[in-house]
Image (cartoon, rainbow, N blue to C red; front, side, top):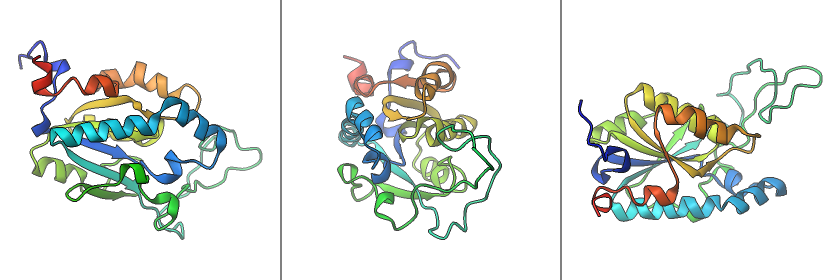
Length: 218
């Protein structure tokens, strides 16, 4: 295949989907004041809003992929791990993984500032990847969409898992660098600098807004 030399800087709205990963109340309005302050400093919610509104203006199809774990924990399998989700080694014995939010809880709702519109899909998921045993791939292929813009929480969990899955399914990707975040040390920057560029285009929201096919020609 011979690439257009401007292909890196272009997106076709008719072939692109915005996939918002776990943009949930519990994650975007965390009870932990330290986490809340970090998100406010990074203006994460404002950037997600700007990205969503820009995609809507361009006619891009929008999909929300949202954790939908059972309240009784019946759909979660215990695994042995060295640390908890915040990379803290177990002090005594390993404890089973427990999701932070469960289906039906207030924290599991999509953040009010990003409320879906009619025609936008809310897709429940049960593991880190938005593709694993969901209808996401079917929904994209049925619409003739071959590229996804990926944004949301958290960079080193669902964003990373979904990016690897999309890559293995031959989807093109743009990862919205400043519309994703992880609270776990340097993980966000490591993935954006050292991992995602090998499988995707890593761009800020401001850069994405200049990439639409008609805008890129100007």
